[in-house]
Image 1 (spheres, rainbow, N blue to C red):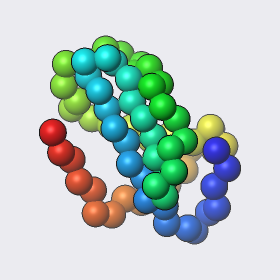
Image 2 (cartoon, rainbow, N blue to C red):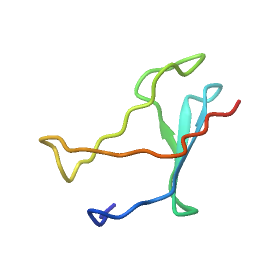
Image 3 (cartoon, rainbow, N blue to C red):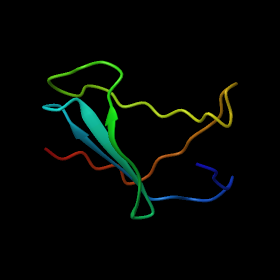
Length: 69
């Protein structure tokens, strides 16, 4: 998904450890649904974000992070 640099987005990731899938929302729009986790897990200890548009790396800023069960 293309994005604008220097712009804040609201990102929501819903992870289902029972099915091994996740859904991604950006600014309250469903971007991906039922995508497979890279590795099956019974709990989540870490979440990582990457950008395929910047494969050499980049800087991501996060604010107001909430984790619920």
